[in-house]
Each structure stands twice: as structure tokens, then as C-alpha cells.
Image 1 (tube, rainbow, N blue to C red):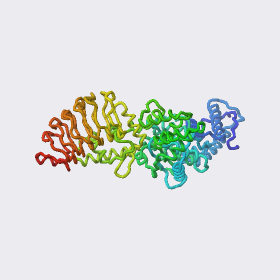
Image 2 (tube, rainbow, N blue to C red; image 1 turned 90 degrees about the horizontal axis):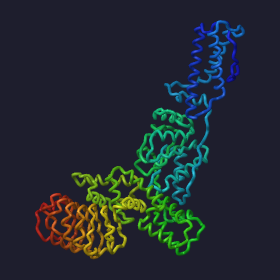
Image 3 (cartoon, rainbow, N blue to C red; image 1 turned 30 degrees about the vertical axis):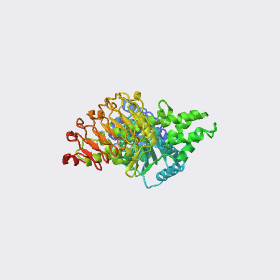
Image 4 (cartoon, rainbow, N blue to C red; image 1 turned 60 degrees about the vertical axis):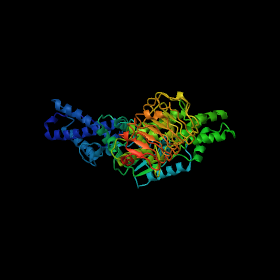
Length: 629
């Protein structure tokens, strides 16, 4: 008999085939093999995995034909004489020999079909490497350098897991799209899978995406473990793979979604905003993607802007300033360039620059495409306290490198760090929070200082837009007018300006205002007594480094005040009686060299921090009040 050819059906003989126990055993064995083959075919069909070889189709057709003949032979009293039982038995044995040839290399490791090597025996593989993705334009040596480094890692044998991290909009996905497409151009990398994970992924949807990338069709099983096993086994048996997981927000178990944990033929790359996620996913190497230099940013902006409009000499410096406001973030640069494409009027350029500088970008492309994307990192922070610590950093001036311990003190002053019983524990908690913010690229670190990227700060101000006034280091000579002081206001930062005086009788009604930062106003500042009259909820008042001679008496009624900071107010000679400030936990009058009086200190039952170094106090107080610092 020719292997794989259909076997001709014959008429039955007069002998009863079913009476032979040996024949029954042979038939049962054959049928069991048929069932296994059909199971494999059904499994492969559910995955759109492989197509059966023609010899397998013929083999099954022969078995079915034989079953029909045997059924007739056992049910008829008289069978045609021209078809003896021996011929049927010969056909059975012939088919069994074919079956043995098809199955002889199979292993028997339990009941897992793919572990039995059936895929390689019975099916023909569908070869595909993947398809190219649409690329965004990127410029600069750093981009080329990072792309080459990633390719070297993926084409080498040193590592199997690589993490690409950086702040939102910095170009992580763009770099990996370019890398993905370069990998497809080479023949020795196997198949390259692109899997977008996203924030709200679940295991089942991720498995469906992987199956789709593998051209396996729809997974029929509902149990995620069975689905994972099928995906994992397929990857193990089907050559080399590079799997790119884009936009990973949190740790997930690779084996649970169907990626082999330790397989020589599978390499993994992930993009994320979190250095911590890279470590949790056991990445052996991590590459941080940094913002573009100003030269690179300007080149990208002009390329996206297009050559249809020639920029005038008057417009060019405005363009440079807009590029600078984008702070090297490719997403912002491309968004701004496309927004301004075709604009010729220099006044329109200047107006948009002013909006950027004032963070007045509501209902603009910058809000919709940049800030809302950056805000996702804020929304993913662990808890409300960590979010508030992050927002507090935005109250400082733009581009300000802030000492870590100054930030931690500010967190403590606002009550954002739990009521730990020692300063050491509070500092430990504060450093942990700062590390979390740095790990998700919301803060930049340089030695003992930290700062916010300009657009990260814009995002924070966008989040606080309704509940805050932030005009730090804006060259103000007057405080914002009273209509800006609404009843929903929670934080005000007017630090490091040139404010000299407040409007006479100004008395804003802001019951929710908890933090007021006026520090660093070196001019001869005068605050009217009425100003604090309705600020009952105020907790933190910072007037450090101000040229004040005295404080308004209305400060005495701030019964919820927890931190009063008057550091280096060198001309300050008195403050109102402190007796009512029962909630006060911190009083800082460091280097107030002209200070004359400090009344009511003995009534501050909750005071935990007192700094009076280099302060001239002319009245005697019990010794215990000088030992709090």
C-alpha cells in the first residue's frame, strides 16, 4: 500500500469479523490512535495553529472507511465471498504500521498534547516573523545610541530580559518601534511580537493578544492556566522569539500569561515608566531614556513644523523659547510643532508661548495629548499621601533643585508623613516616598537634591489647577487679586517674588486653605492685620527669608496652625502671643537676630520642633523649651 494513499473499501465476507477477539483488540488499538490524532487536529484548529499533512487526512479517511466495513461485517448474517476477513485484518495492520510511523518519535509526558511533540509530527508550521509598525520620526545621537545598544543586547547572548524606562512622552515606545522594525529586517532573530500591556490589562486579555500576535486565532479555553500552558508550549517548540511588552505599569507573572520563564529561544523587552517594575520583572539590563538636548529638540520641532512656512527673524527666538518650554520631551515637541504648523503671525506665536509659560493650557493640544498622558503616572501612585507629596514639589519654582531633607520637612509640616514617633523614622518614610517618585520618573535626582521636569511640574499644576495658586518666582510685586482667592483654595505658593505689600483690608475667605508659602520675598513686606482673619484652616505658614518687622495680630487666631516658619527673618522683632496656637508642632525662628519677644511658648502643648539658634531672645523661659530641637 502506498503511504498516505486512500485504502479501497471492500465488501464483507460471510465470516463474522466481530467473533475474533484478536481482531477486536487490533481495532480498539487503531481507534484509540485515531482518537488521539483527531484530538490533536481539533486542538490545532482551535488555535489556527497548523494544517494537517495530506497523509494524515488520508490515514483518518482509511480508518473511517474500515470502521464502516467492519460495522457491516459484524451486523450482516451473510457477507460477500469476494472479501475475506483476512483482507480486513491486513488493512488494519497496514494502517497500524502507518500509525506507528506517525507516532514513533512522540514522548509521553502526561496528558499534555503539546508535550507529546504532536505539533512537529502531524502539522506543518506556518512561518511568519511579524509585520512592521508605523514609525514616528526621531532625531539625535542619544536616540541612535540607545537603539544600537538595544539591538546589541537582543542580538547577543548575554541577556534575555531588557528594561527600557523613562518618564511619559520621552520616546520609549518610539525607540522600541524603530527597534522592532530593524529586528524584522534581519533573518536570524526569529519572530518579533509586539504586545501592548496598558494600565488596566488582565491576564486573559493579554493572553488573547499574545495568541493573536502568534497567529493562533482565538483561544477557546476559559481557564487561564490551560491557556498559559498552550502559549508557553508553543513558544518553546516554535523557534526563536523576541517579545516586546510596551507600556507596562506594574509587575505580572510571565508564566501566568504564557511566556516561558527561562527559555533560551525567548527574549523579553519591556517599556515602562517605573524603574521598580524593571527590577520586579527581573530585567538583567535597564536603559533609561532621557529627554532630548536643546539642539536635538529644536531639530525635531523644525522637522515636524515643515518647510511650508519660512520663519521670520522675529519669530525664530519665539520658536526657540517654545522648544525650551517643551523641555526635551518628544511628545510635547511633536504636539507643539503640529499645533503651530502653518502659523505665520508672530503675535500668535508669542501668545501661545505666553500660555505655555503661565501653564494656561486648558483646552489645548498640550493638555489633551501631553499633560493628560503624564497625569497617568500621578494617578498610579500608591496612595493619597504620596500623591500629595508629589504635588507639594510643584509648589517650588520651576527648574529648582530642592534639597531632599527640605522636601521631607515640608511633607512633615503638612502632615503627609504618618505620626511616627521619632524624626529618624519620619525621615526614613520621607526618603522612601521620594525614591518612589524618582523610580516612576516623576522626580529627577542629583546627589542630595531633586527637581521636577518642567512638563511634569506643568502636569502637577494642571492637577491642582482649581485648588491652588502657584506663582513661585514669577517676579510678582503684588499678590493675586482677591477674586482668585476662592473658597475651594487649598494651597498658595508665592515664594521668591518681590511682593512688598498686601491690599489694605484684604481678607480672603478661604476656609480650606491649608498651606501658604510666602518665603523668599526680600522686599519690605507688610501684611495687613485683616489678612488671616478668615483663614481658619491654615496649617502651614512659611514666611522665612522675608523682610518683615512684625506679624499681624490675626495670626494668633490660627488655631489649626501646625507649622510656623520664620527662618532668617532678620528684621522681625516680635510676633503675636502664641497661646491660642495649641496645634502648633513646629516653630522655626532660626537666625531672627532682631527678635525681642516670644510670648505664650509655655502654652504650646503639642510643640515638637523649636529652632531658636542665632535668635536674640530678651526674656527668660524655662530651660525645657530650648531642648526641643
